Image 1 (cartoon, rainbow, N blue to C red):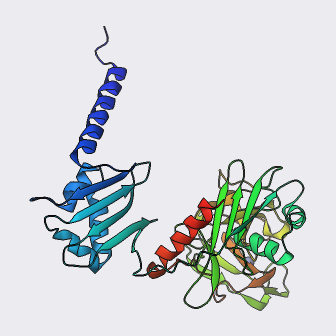
Image 2: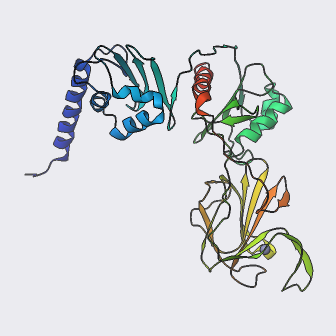
Amino acid sequence: MKLYNPMSRFFSLALLILLLQFNVDTAFAHSQDNEYHFTVKSGDSLSKYFTKLGLSKRLLANLLSASKKNQQLNQLKIGEKITIRLHTNRRFNSLSYQSKNKRDLNIALIGTRFVHAPKQSQKTETPLVTTPVVINSSFGYDAQKAGLSLNTINTVVEALSWQLNFDSDLYKNDKFLIVSDGSKQPVGIIYKGDNKHIEAFAHKDARGQTLYYNRYGYSLNSSFLKAPLKYNRISSTFQLKRYHPILKTYRPHRAIDYAAAHGTPVRSTADGIVKLQGWKGALGKAVIINHGAHYTTVYAHLSKYARNLRQGKPVKKGQVIGYVGSTGRSTGAHLHYELRYKGKRQNPLTHKTPEQQKVSRDELWEFRSKVNNILTGL
Ligand SMILES: [Zn+2]
């Protein structure tokens, strides 16, 4: 006889969940799937409702501290109404609060940020047009055939290049959906591949700059680390004339050399896609990474590569790509690091690389409703 039966444990857990579900459903009116209505009774608190729905104390604390306005949720009055909406995976979606003598609140969680519905929503429902592009030969060719302008094609490539290698990631029958509201740039770009799904939504920030963001309001471009490793010192800076100890001549050094112990981990300075992993003449064992359409970084004289590194595959900012060595034309253990912008070597210590942006909290609600509008129209 078995002393421990995992199946019976599974069934009792399932039963418990069913009972809990039943309790939740009978405890208050339940009008729509995943929408829970509470009318405040004596002794009630938001914390009680959160517990009933299986939402964490930490989430509640984050909600209350996200804004001064939210603190009125600490003193609910009898008869006030709270509606909490959950996603199908039981994660928190949004909360509405009907107050007796204060302002009503509508709060949504977008990514990791709680945002308020604006006082008056600017509903400018411009009709959207979606152009599908199905990959048959190449994105450029197929997009032109689908009727997209060269300008739009370039915009799409620039927006998605941080995450998609247009040369090697695309397969026949992969699909792009280009959503336009009639303005110059697409408002939404969606890529659906077999194992990759990328979304980009246009947003113009307060300074008038239009960038592409994911649905949580983070721009698709990565920011860069200051340096690709923990180093002892910079042994050679970016300079146009440097005496070369091996070649015994003066030559430009359009890179930074970081002196570091043999085997020190080297990290990709930004999100990107591995363009090359291999021996590259004087650079020895090298890794070259593309970051978006315009940036490239080079890491040279490595002793070895990170085990999981693959040419053509994505890397994250800070991911270890290899280890310091002295391969190629090198006099001692160091990392030779180059930053290229549009093919030209830049001084990594002074060149201003792009920062990842996020949609401001004030604009996030509007942004998200535009995103929802685009996604439901597909
Ligand atoms: Zn160097």
